[in-house]
Length: 117
Image (cartoon, rainbow, N blue to C red; front, side):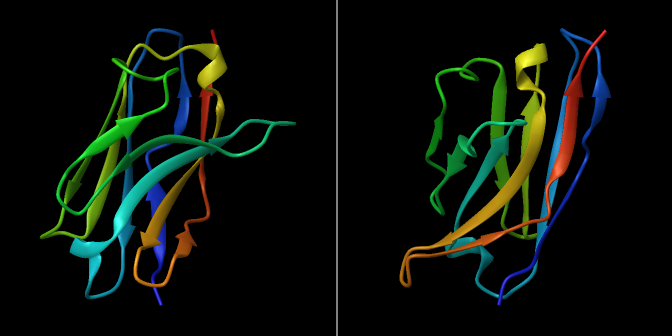
């Protein structure tokens, strides 16, 4: 069982920045593929960024160059730095842990990011 707890969301003006954090329970964090997804009202949940156990990252085209995903295996933490935020980035952001061996996904409860002037 893996529990994920997100924090760091909030209201920010366009062009601003936020840092989201996700704390994970469990003893095998270092082997999980971690990711951030988001879901805006009336839209499907979409991938924002992922990072493998080895540190390889990939991003949605809409956030490349603006968002950065990172992880600290010693602390069981994954982060998402959001820069140059746009109103279209407004969504609930979810932390995800993917267990490759079982093809199973764990999700956090989500944190709201609102970009508005």
